[in-house]
Image (cartoon, rainbow over the protein chains, first blue to last red):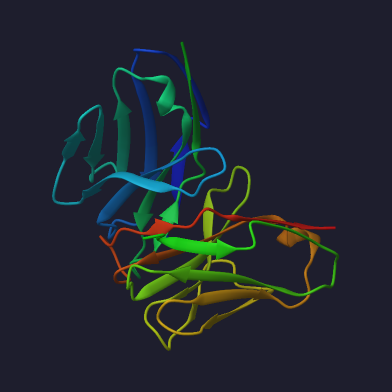
Length: 111
Length: 114
């Protein structure tokens, strides 16, 4: 089945700097890659997603890139702010269309 | 519009006890899911219901049962709780099952089995 690996597990950045989280997947048939943000005590919430026919997608300060050949995709957060502190999960769909999640990255933005 | 609502928020069980986690969504979604979240393991799918009247096993179904009561409600039952089932449980829903459909999560239910 699909296996999603996510790195790093924790990331500490200075406010205003950029943060990058990387994920790799194993199923070459995967075609949908969402990113979720989970704040403390809350459920995960979709922040951006990308499909396999697109290499890059941007929404204000967040962007996602996809390299299908290498089977990896990344989340980029620019000009980080304290409210970006959260756990971020990548995911990809398996051959049945069900999401497989990475283990998560705890991002801490320090003022 | 509350989205996905799950109860209870917190529960402590003794080993061997049973309980049911309730979930309801008000977005008229066809598909509903139960995930568990454990440290360092992300979210793992327990069971899902692609549409009313159907349920299927996910990645970690052992020790659980589900019921899709109607289009709005999807419950998760632990028949004989074990300490390994201590976890945070999330109910979720999407308009349809399959790739590209945004999954909306509830706030979570913290379950401790002692």
